[in-house]
Length: 394
Image (cartoon, rainbow, N blue to C red; front, side, top):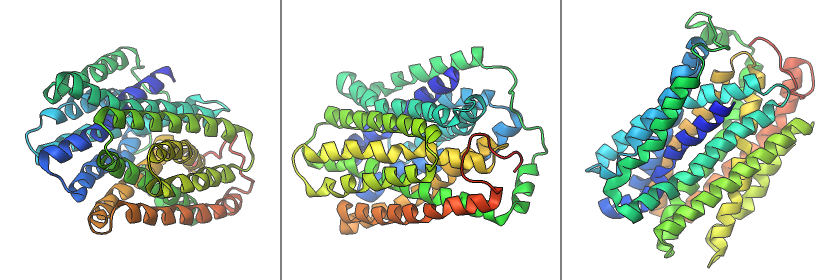
């Protein structure tokens, strides 16, 4: 668990470099909102749509080399963004670097399910907290390098990732305890035969995750530009995103603790999403320091629901934890990243405010849809939602 937590923190540090670089790259290459949205979209597509593949491979072959590849190659390629000569090369480096991030996430999340005992909700939240903590520091880390020694020195940022990869190479077990030795296509064959109601359960989880991920992606794409236009300097933008991530990470820890304590777990997801809506709504309707405060507080509610959705998926498919985690993280983030391209184009036409408000409607639809989850779960498993053990088999 210690290795899982630390590797997640270091790897996700590099995931947020692009947030600190958005104002710099937008000015340097004269980028429109659509081209800026492409930066976060490409990052999300590479980081997410490939996760089910890495989840399947880590379930079958073990997690060791996927966990090592995450911090190593994300550090190398994403740290080169500052010296990339043009926009196209930036997209290539972002894609490859976030592909490495994707290789770490499914086995990393699965370790919480395997080693969390009867506190799996808290274990997943600890791992999620570590990733969010690293992510919250990433934009500030790269901004400080740029402002203190210059943008052409960003390659030195790869040092923490290389050190983490060496530690993992030395201390991770040579073989995985939870490797799945079934045939290479067995999961997908079984998935085709699984009860349709289980697919329905998974679809609900993915839709709720999609709404949250799309809003999160919208905020991290638009807010650096919004705060820059409001006259906030680059270092303060980095600090804003650091607090946004740290507050969100603390929300995730609290949600994981409550998940293990409360019986009505779906209500916990609904409340976290519902309470975050007004904070986002009033960001664009306030002045001064208020938009910053509203933005930071919104992270507490929206980020906290991530580990909760992962736990739902893992309990639907308890013997395929890596790929169950990847289906939620990967598909929802991947679809939201593709959708972000459309939102970037829309923002060029109707503005960032109206575009963000349209995403809030998707969140509301997810809150309503997830209300059906307990009924379908009881019909599928023949018991109420309790999640203390989980049904064996797919």
